[in-house]
Length: 445
Image (cartoon, rainbow, N blue to C red; front, side):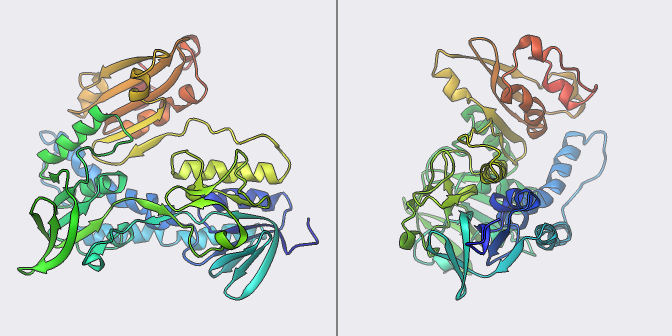
């Protein structure tokens, strides 16, 4: 639609912060390009959600068999090599599939490293491309500890491609990635030690539920080392050694550095063109996802919106920009309730107002339930199953969280009630399939 520039919109990065919006934008007749130096699809399909859940499913199957051990006979085990081969089988085709989808809408996919040179120009390996609007969607990358011997550590991308599972894995960190990979590696037969900087894991989730998950992992043999400052990695006695504060040591076969993720803001021209950013939080944006340079926007994990850095957030932002660029809206972005889940075993999922926030305010009421005796949970012998609902003063459902093996499905089921802030009378008009976990999820509302 523009004759002044090569493209109407050019995206730097090809993850969910791009392709979920780029394709519908191109379908509306806009000329679009996507620049990507690595795999099309970004972290989520290639080194994140899709890869992780493929490796996690056998672990969940083993957990189910353990709970039904008096009914389903036999001792299951995970063949890690076959598990990894299956992961590759289901995800390796995704980059080509996503690129094919982009190109089917007439989008130019430009392979190479993109760098801003002014408010309308991106240099890709020495060739310049111009656009009326540019969207930076470069995402996050694993943080790496800066200690002596740091080259001996591995990151999440490495772990998701390891063909032989080590006898012992030391995981540094206690966030999403650390706890999820600890669950998977433990189920697959590795000895696991989790090294924590503080004394609490998964700080973004309800502490009581986190304690239940940690206790369960300890019962399964996972070791937790709290309040540990990593000082050095080195080889000792044919083992990789982690030196910790307090004269403590951990001997291991494999170090996984899961100390968080940081925005990809370096070396993409932000300083040169005047885009404001913070190395910890990402690119500053206003309520229209616009940066300090009017023609440049940011989407996905690299954008400092204050929202959870999750795939659903990136999708929503990308689709919002499509509506904004096409003139369908001029309104500021209005984020919905975005759910989050940690795929441990059991899982913890949540959406909306948190339990901690609710208990510290007079504006909310918290209703807590232990579901281990509920009939649906009795079928699968769940030993950990708790849920909390948060209501506002008008008794609209504004938040929920659960710890259980079905927590992700439960929170997904009641998500519409939270997103739409349904009241009791509206909730009672919703009839569910029975018997299902969905019907169980709504019985206390």
